[in-house]
Image 1 (cartoon, rainbow, N blue to C red):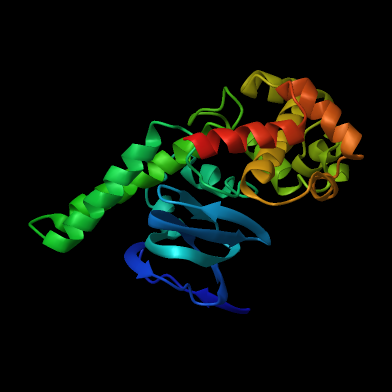
Image 2 (image 1 turned 90 degrees about the horizontal axis):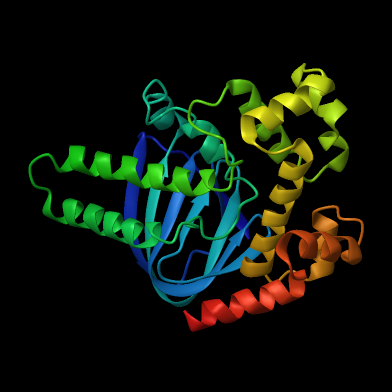
Length: 285
């Protein structure tokens, strides 16, 4: 498929589109894009992975991600685009602190971004409110729309932050955020995740690095890396058709036995059982 790369000219833009066929292109942007499924079903392709989408799913496309859609049933999409300057303008406020970091760390987290159950009806309501404001265009509709957009982005950030180490807050020091960013950028390269390599890259002695990370996050570096990789395994089990051996290869586990042992140790069941149970629960819901 051909690739379309677009430029965003405003701090944020939104659009509702009713489609039966999604243009057969692979898209890539230099800005953030939220895609909410108002109605319909089909398949989303993101960075060579595929995910079944349905009503109520919200996807975050980060800069340089590639994506496309195959529509099974006629779908209504809500597209909300915003660039880094939109976040930077608010960086000095409580709303903006660490927002840029959190959003960029959505990378390697494909599938529906909404992990917090109570946020699903909230996002549905916010999207509906934007639609109503756009249709009615009453006094102050632009300012009200901007506030709703702020809220949507903040809810997305909350859902990403739920998966960050438990003690991470908006006021956490920059060095630990740099460590997290480095780990998530290098998660596919185990050699770069050795404590001495991380320390050398960030200019921190490896003896101090481990203690500092544990104090700031409540987890050891090893625990964080394992938990992060296992969350990536969960995402692939739930939102892709990848086989276990493909996940093993992509995430650099020694072999299937290694992944099975680690997954069972932390989750209580092996990956195949986890996928079966979770998909059964989704079917029932």
